[in-house]
Length: 385
Image 1 (cartoon, rainbow, N blue to C red):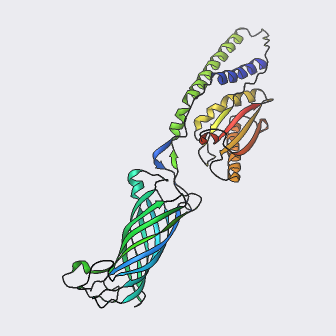
Image 2: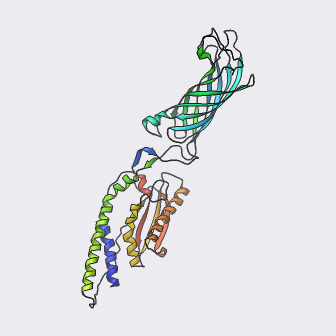
Image 3: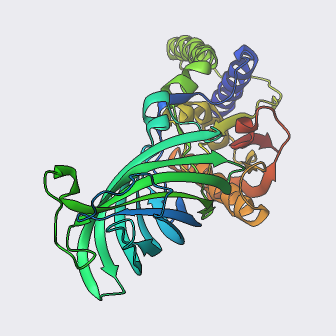
Protein backbone atom coordinates (compact mmCIF):
# COMPACT_ATOMS: atom_id res chain seq x y z
CA UNK A 1 0.00 0.00 0.00
CA UNK A 2 2.80 2.39 0.90
CA UNK A 3 4.57 1.65 -2.38
CA UNK A 4 1.36 2.25 -4.29
CA UNK A 5 0.81 5.67 -2.71
CA UNK A 6 4.43 6.64 -3.35
CA UNK A 7 4.03 5.67 -6.98
CA UNK A 8 0.93 7.83 -7.22
CA UNK A 9 2.76 10.84 -5.72
CA UNK A 10 5.71 10.53 -8.11
CA UNK A 11 3.37 9.98 -11.05
CA UNK A 12 1.43 13.10 -10.05
CA UNK A 13 4.63 15.16 -10.04
CA UNK A 14 5.71 13.77 -13.40
CA UNK A 15 2.36 14.37 -15.06
CA UNK A 16 2.23 17.95 -13.83
CA UNK A 17 5.72 18.61 -15.13
CA UNK A 18 4.96 17.10 -18.55
CA UNK A 19 1.64 18.95 -18.81
CA UNK A 20 3.32 22.29 -18.12
CA UNK A 21 3.50 24.47 -21.21
CA UNK A 22 6.11 27.08 -22.06
CA UNK A 23 4.74 30.60 -22.08
CA UNK A 24 6.55 33.47 -23.75
CA UNK A 25 6.31 36.64 -21.69
CA UNK A 26 7.64 40.14 -21.92
CA UNK A 27 9.37 42.26 -19.29
CA UNK A 28 7.72 42.86 -15.93
CA UNK A 29 4.59 44.99 -16.51
CA UNK A 30 4.31 48.26 -14.62
CA UNK A 31 1.54 50.70 -13.78
CA UNK A 32 2.01 53.59 -16.17
CA UNK A 33 0.71 56.33 -13.85
CA UNK A 34 1.97 55.04 -10.51
CA UNK A 35 5.42 55.08 -8.88
CA UNK A 36 6.83 53.42 -5.78
CA UNK A 37 7.63 55.53 -2.74
CA UNK A 38 11.34 55.83 -2.04
CA UNK A 39 13.07 56.10 1.32
CA UNK A 40 13.51 59.47 3.04
CA UNK A 41 17.17 59.65 2.01
CA UNK A 42 16.40 59.24 -1.70
CA UNK A 43 15.86 61.97 -4.31
CA UNK A 44 17.79 64.75 -2.56
CA UNK A 45 19.60 67.41 -4.58
CA UNK A 46 21.91 70.39 -4.15
CA UNK A 47 22.32 73.28 -6.58
CA UNK A 48 24.48 76.36 -6.97
CA UNK A 49 24.58 79.16 -9.50
CA UNK A 50 25.23 82.81 -10.38
CA UNK A 51 22.51 85.49 -10.06
CA UNK A 52 21.76 88.67 -11.95
CA UNK A 53 19.69 90.94 -9.66
CA UNK A 54 17.60 93.97 -10.65
CA UNK A 55 16.15 95.92 -7.69
CA UNK A 56 12.99 98.10 -7.89
CA UNK A 57 12.35 100.34 -4.85
CA UNK A 58 8.98 101.76 -3.82
CA UNK A 59 10.15 105.41 -3.88
CA UNK A 60 11.84 105.66 -7.27
CA UNK A 61 10.52 108.34 -9.65
CA UNK A 62 11.34 109.37 -13.21
CA UNK A 63 13.80 106.56 -13.92
CA UNK A 64 13.99 103.81 -16.51
CA UNK A 65 12.20 100.54 -15.73
CA UNK A 66 14.72 98.51 -17.72
CA UNK A 67 16.25 95.72 -15.60
CA UNK A 68 19.59 96.34 -17.30
CA UNK A 69 20.01 100.13 -17.08
CA UNK A 70 21.62 101.15 -13.78
CA UNK A 71 19.99 98.27 -11.87
CA UNK A 72 21.89 95.05 -12.35
CA UNK A 73 24.39 93.49 -9.97
CA UNK A 74 25.80 89.98 -9.75
CA UNK A 75 25.38 87.54 -6.88
CA UNK A 76 25.15 83.81 -6.22
CA UNK A 77 22.73 81.19 -4.89
CA UNK A 78 22.91 77.77 -3.22
CA UNK A 79 20.03 75.41 -2.44
CA UNK A 80 19.28 71.97 -1.02
CA UNK A 81 16.02 70.10 -1.54
CA UNK A 82 14.17 66.83 -1.98
CA UNK A 83 11.56 65.45 -4.38
CA UNK A 84 8.85 63.59 -2.45
CA UNK A 85 6.96 62.62 -5.60
CA UNK A 86 7.80 63.14 -9.29
CA UNK A 87 5.69 66.31 -9.22
CA UNK A 88 6.17 67.76 -5.74
CA UNK A 89 9.36 68.86 -3.96
CA UNK A 90 10.68 71.23 -1.30
CA UNK A 91 13.90 73.23 -1.14
CA UNK A 92 15.72 75.74 1.07
CA UNK A 93 17.59 78.42 -0.87
CA UNK A 94 20.03 81.21 -0.06
CA UNK A 95 20.66 83.98 -2.61
CA UNK A 96 21.97 87.53 -2.80
CA UNK A 97 24.25 89.39 -2.24
CA UNK A 98 24.58 92.71 -4.10
CA UNK A 99 21.91 95.25 -5.09
CA UNK A 100 21.31 98.80 -6.30
CA UNK A 101 18.70 101.06 -4.74
CA UNK A 102 17.44 103.18 -7.62
CA UNK A 103 15.81 106.36 -6.26
CA UNK A 104 16.44 108.87 -9.04
CA UNK A 105 18.70 108.97 -12.08
CA UNK A 106 21.49 110.42 -9.93
CA UNK A 107 20.74 108.70 -6.60
CA UNK A 108 21.61 105.00 -7.00
CA UNK A 109 23.25 103.74 -3.79
CA UNK A 110 24.59 100.20 -3.64
CA UNK A 111 23.84 97.81 -0.80
CA UNK A 112 24.41 94.22 0.32
CA UNK A 113 21.57 91.82 1.15
CA UNK A 114 20.67 88.14 1.46
CA UNK A 115 17.47 86.17 1.07
CA UNK A 116 16.92 82.81 2.84
CA UNK A 117 13.66 81.17 1.83
CA UNK A 118 11.82 77.87 1.53
CA UNK A 119 10.01 76.98 -1.71
CA UNK A 120 7.44 74.45 -2.84
CA UNK A 121 8.40 73.05 -6.27
CA UNK A 122 5.83 71.85 -8.82
CA UNK A 123 7.28 69.79 -11.69
CA UNK A 124 4.57 70.39 -14.28
CA UNK A 125 6.41 68.28 -16.86
CA UNK A 126 5.87 65.18 -14.71
CA UNK A 127 2.41 66.22 -13.53
CA UNK A 128 1.02 66.83 -17.02
CA UNK A 129 3.06 64.49 -19.23
CA UNK A 130 3.77 61.59 -16.87
CA UNK A 131 6.95 60.72 -15.03
CA UNK A 132 10.02 60.18 -17.20
CA UNK A 133 13.39 59.98 -15.46
CA UNK A 134 15.23 60.59 -18.76
CA UNK A 135 13.26 63.67 -19.84
CA UNK A 136 15.69 66.35 -21.02
CA UNK A 137 13.74 69.45 -19.97
CA UNK A 138 11.65 69.85 -16.81
CA UNK A 139 9.45 72.93 -16.29
CA UNK A 140 9.13 73.67 -12.54
CA UNK A 141 7.20 76.68 -11.16
CA UNK A 142 7.69 77.44 -7.46
CA UNK A 143 6.52 79.72 -4.67
CA UNK A 144 7.72 80.31 -1.15
CA UNK A 145 8.61 82.73 1.60
CA UNK A 146 11.49 83.52 3.93
CA UNK A 147 13.66 86.03 5.75
CA UNK A 148 15.60 88.80 3.98
CA UNK A 149 18.17 91.19 5.34
CA UNK A 150 19.51 94.50 4.04
CA UNK A 151 23.03 94.21 5.43
CA UNK A 152 23.92 97.83 4.66
CA UNK A 153 21.29 99.19 7.07
CA UNK A 154 20.95 96.04 9.24
CA UNK A 155 17.26 95.72 8.41
CA UNK A 156 15.45 92.34 8.68
CA UNK A 157 12.06 91.65 7.15
CA UNK A 158 10.12 88.92 5.35
CA UNK A 159 9.71 88.34 1.64
CA UNK A 160 7.62 86.32 -0.80
CA UNK A 161 9.29 84.43 -3.65
CA UNK A 162 7.95 83.00 -6.89
CA UNK A 163 9.45 81.97 -10.18
CA UNK A 164 10.16 79.25 -12.72
CA UNK A 165 12.99 76.73 -12.53
CA UNK A 166 14.05 74.99 -15.74
CA UNK A 167 16.34 71.96 -15.52
CA UNK A 168 18.15 70.34 -18.46
CA UNK A 169 19.32 66.77 -17.85
CA UNK A 170 22.96 65.86 -18.49
CA UNK A 171 22.86 62.43 -16.81
CA UNK A 172 21.10 60.86 -13.84
CA UNK A 173 23.36 62.76 -11.41
CA UNK A 174 23.79 66.15 -13.07
CA UNK A 175 21.60 68.78 -14.71
CA UNK A 176 21.97 72.41 -15.80
CA UNK A 177 19.38 74.81 -14.38
CA UNK A 178 18.12 78.18 -15.56
CA UNK A 179 15.82 80.11 -13.23
CA UNK A 180 13.90 83.37 -13.30
CA UNK A 181 12.20 84.67 -10.19
CA UNK A 182 10.97 87.60 -8.17
CA UNK A 183 11.29 88.63 -4.53
CA UNK A 184 8.56 90.91 -3.11
CA UNK A 185 9.38 92.66 0.18
CA UNK A 186 7.70 95.36 2.32
CA UNK A 187 8.50 98.87 1.11
CA UNK A 188 10.75 99.47 4.12
CA UNK A 189 13.24 96.78 3.08
CA UNK A 190 15.66 99.46 1.80
CA UNK A 191 15.06 101.52 5.00
CA UNK A 192 12.92 103.96 3.00
CA UNK A 193 9.17 103.38 3.43
CA UNK A 194 8.16 106.15 1.00
CA UNK A 195 5.87 105.14 -1.88
CA UNK A 196 5.73 107.18 -5.09
CA UNK A 197 2.32 108.79 -5.67
CA UNK A 198 -0.16 107.15 -8.01
CA UNK A 199 2.09 104.13 -8.39
CA UNK A 200 0.18 101.26 -6.80
CA UNK A 201 2.58 98.66 -8.15
CA UNK A 202 5.35 100.38 -6.16
CA UNK A 203 3.65 99.52 -2.84
CA UNK A 204 6.52 97.09 -2.21
CA UNK A 205 10.24 96.73 -2.88
CA UNK A 206 11.02 94.06 -5.47
CA UNK A 207 14.00 92.16 -6.84
CA UNK A 208 13.92 90.40 -10.20
CA UNK A 209 16.52 87.66 -10.59
CA UNK A 210 17.84 85.42 -13.33
CA UNK A 211 20.35 82.69 -12.58
CA UNK A 212 22.18 79.81 -14.23
CA UNK A 213 23.85 76.94 -12.38
CA UNK A 214 24.18 73.20 -11.79
CA UNK A 215 22.08 70.70 -9.86
CA UNK A 216 23.54 67.46 -8.45
CA UNK A 217 21.25 64.59 -7.46
CA UNK A 218 22.26 62.84 -4.24
CA UNK A 219 21.70 59.39 -2.75
CA UNK A 220 21.61 55.87 -4.13
CA UNK A 221 18.21 56.50 -5.70
CA UNK A 222 17.97 59.47 -8.06
CA UNK A 223 14.53 58.86 -9.54
CA UNK A 224 11.30 56.97 -8.99
CA UNK A 225 10.61 53.36 -10.01
CA UNK A 226 7.25 52.68 -11.62
CA UNK A 227 5.08 50.38 -9.52
CA UNK A 228 4.94 46.75 -10.63
CA UNK A 229 1.55 45.57 -11.86
CA UNK A 230 1.54 42.23 -10.02
CA UNK A 231 -1.89 41.22 -11.34
CA UNK A 232 -0.72 41.69 -14.93
CA UNK A 233 2.49 39.82 -14.15
CA UNK A 234 0.62 36.82 -12.82
CA UNK A 235 -1.76 36.86 -15.79
CA UNK A 236 1.25 36.19 -18.02
CA UNK A 237 1.73 32.81 -16.29
CA UNK A 238 -1.95 31.90 -16.10
CA UNK A 239 -1.68 29.17 -18.74
CA UNK A 240 1.03 27.45 -16.69
CA UNK A 241 -1.14 27.55 -13.57
CA UNK A 242 -4.14 26.23 -15.51
CA UNK A 243 -2.11 23.31 -16.85
CA UNK A 244 -0.82 22.50 -13.37
CA UNK A 245 -4.29 22.61 -11.83
CA UNK A 246 -5.66 20.41 -14.61
CA UNK A 247 -2.92 17.81 -14.04
CA UNK A 248 -3.53 17.84 -10.29
CA UNK A 249 -7.27 17.31 -10.80
CA UNK A 250 -6.60 14.37 -13.13
CA UNK A 251 -4.31 12.71 -10.60
CA UNK A 252 -6.78 13.23 -7.79
CA UNK A 253 -9.45 11.48 -9.84
CA UNK A 254 -7.07 8.58 -10.55
CA UNK A 255 -6.18 8.30 -6.87
CA UNK A 256 -9.86 8.12 -5.97
CA UNK A 257 -10.44 5.39 -8.54
CA UNK A 258 -7.56 3.25 -7.24
CA UNK A 259 -8.68 3.67 -3.62
CA UNK A 260 -12.17 2.52 -4.63
CA UNK A 261 -10.75 -0.62 -6.26
CA UNK A 262 -8.67 -1.38 -3.19
CA UNK A 263 -11.73 -1.03 -0.98
CA UNK A 264 -13.53 -3.68 -3.02
CA UNK A 265 -10.69 -6.18 -2.48
CA UNK A 266 -9.57 -5.73 1.14
CA UNK A 267 -8.05 -9.23 1.48
CA UNK A 268 -6.11 -9.17 -1.76
CA UNK A 269 -2.42 -8.45 -1.53
CA UNK A 270 -1.65 -5.84 -4.13
CA UNK A 271 1.86 -5.99 -5.49
CA UNK A 272 2.93 -3.00 -7.46
CA UNK A 273 6.25 -2.87 -9.19
CA UNK A 274 7.51 0.62 -9.82
CA UNK A 275 10.68 2.46 -10.59
CA UNK A 276 11.53 5.80 -9.02
CA UNK A 277 11.77 8.40 -11.70
CA UNK A 278 12.60 12.01 -11.07
CA UNK A 279 11.54 14.30 -13.84
CA UNK A 280 13.53 17.51 -14.24
CA UNK A 281 10.75 20.00 -13.59
CA UNK A 282 12.23 23.00 -11.77
CA UNK A 283 9.87 25.67 -10.51
CA UNK A 284 10.62 29.40 -10.67
CA UNK A 285 9.31 31.81 -8.02
CA UNK A 286 9.62 35.48 -9.06
CA UNK A 287 10.29 38.60 -6.99
CA UNK A 288 10.00 42.33 -7.47
CA UNK A 289 13.18 44.38 -7.86
CA UNK A 290 15.17 44.74 -4.63
CA UNK A 291 12.65 42.67 -2.63
CA UNK A 292 12.71 39.28 -0.90
CA UNK A 293 8.91 39.18 -0.66
CA UNK A 294 7.28 36.71 -3.09
CA UNK A 295 5.46 38.75 -5.75
CA UNK A 296 2.24 36.74 -5.47
CA UNK A 297 1.00 34.02 -3.15
CA UNK A 298 -0.42 32.27 -6.22
CA UNK A 299 3.09 31.11 -7.09
CA UNK A 300 3.20 28.91 -3.96
CA UNK A 301 0.83 26.54 -5.83
CA UNK A 302 3.83 25.59 -7.99
CA UNK A 303 5.56 24.09 -4.92
CA UNK A 304 2.77 21.84 -3.63
CA UNK A 305 3.52 18.86 -5.92
CA UNK A 306 7.22 18.90 -5.02
CA UNK A 307 6.40 19.13 -1.32
CA UNK A 308 4.07 16.12 -1.58
CA UNK A 309 6.76 14.03 -3.31
CA UNK A 310 9.36 14.82 -0.65
CA UNK A 311 6.94 13.97 2.16
CA UNK A 312 6.25 10.62 0.49
CA UNK A 313 9.93 9.75 -0.05
CA UNK A 314 12.47 11.16 2.42
CA UNK A 315 15.34 10.27 0.06
CA UNK A 316 14.29 13.13 -2.23
CA UNK A 317 15.86 16.51 -1.62
CA UNK A 318 14.90 19.90 -3.01
CA UNK A 319 17.57 22.37 -4.08
CA UNK A 320 16.49 25.99 -3.53
CA UNK A 321 18.69 28.45 -5.42
CA UNK A 322 18.21 32.22 -5.17
CA UNK A 323 19.25 34.82 -7.75
CA UNK A 324 19.22 38.60 -8.17
CA UNK A 325 19.44 40.90 -11.18
CA UNK A 326 23.08 41.92 -11.69
CA UNK A 327 22.02 45.01 -13.67
CA UNK A 328 20.90 46.70 -10.44
CA UNK A 329 22.63 46.87 -7.06
CA UNK A 330 26.16 46.05 -5.95
CA UNK A 331 27.59 42.51 -5.93
CA UNK A 332 27.49 42.38 -2.12
CA UNK A 333 23.88 43.56 -1.97
CA UNK A 334 22.78 41.08 -4.67
CA UNK A 335 24.50 38.19 -2.85
CA UNK A 336 22.60 38.91 0.36
CA UNK A 337 19.36 39.52 -1.57
CA UNK A 338 19.66 36.15 -3.38
CA UNK A 339 20.20 34.39 -0.04
CA UNK A 340 17.18 36.10 1.53
CA UNK A 341 15.03 35.08 -1.45
CA UNK A 342 16.17 31.45 -1.24
CA UNK A 343 15.47 31.33 2.50
CA UNK A 344 12.05 32.87 1.94
CA UNK A 345 11.06 30.07 -0.46
CA UNK A 346 12.59 27.47 1.88
CA UNK A 347 10.35 28.79 4.66
CA UNK A 348 7.31 28.32 2.42
CA UNK A 349 8.31 24.71 1.70
CA UNK A 350 8.63 24.04 5.43
CA UNK A 351 5.10 25.41 5.89
CA UNK A 352 3.98 22.87 3.26
CA UNK A 353 5.41 20.06 5.42
CA UNK A 354 8.93 19.61 3.99
CA UNK A 355 11.66 18.92 6.55
CA UNK A 356 14.65 21.28 6.64
CA UNK A 357 16.84 18.19 6.27
CA UNK A 358 15.42 17.70 2.77
CA UNK A 359 16.36 21.21 1.61
CA UNK A 360 19.60 22.47 0.08
CA UNK A 361 19.50 26.28 0.17
CA UNK A 362 21.96 28.65 -1.52
CA UNK A 363 22.15 32.13 -3.02
CA UNK A 364 24.22 32.78 -6.16
CA UNK A 365 24.06 36.58 -6.16
CA UNK A 366 23.40 38.74 -9.21
CA UNK A 367 23.23 37.11 -12.65
CA UNK A 368 22.41 38.19 -16.19
CA UNK A 369 21.66 34.79 -17.71
CA UNK A 370 18.09 35.57 -18.83
CA UNK A 371 16.51 38.29 -20.90
CA UNK A 372 14.74 40.50 -19.93
CA UNK A 373 16.59 41.29 -16.72
CA UNK A 374 13.44 40.88 -14.60
CA UNK A 375 13.57 37.08 -15.13
CA UNK A 376 16.79 36.94 -13.08
CA UNK A 377 14.93 38.10 -9.94
CA UNK A 378 13.83 34.61 -8.95
CA UNK A 379 14.34 31.43 -6.95
CA UNK A 380 14.56 28.04 -8.70
CA UNK A 381 13.39 24.91 -6.86
CA UNK A 382 14.65 21.63 -8.35
CA UNK A 383 14.64 17.94 -7.35
CA UNK A 384 17.95 16.27 -6.47
CA UNK A 385 18.70 12.74 -5.26
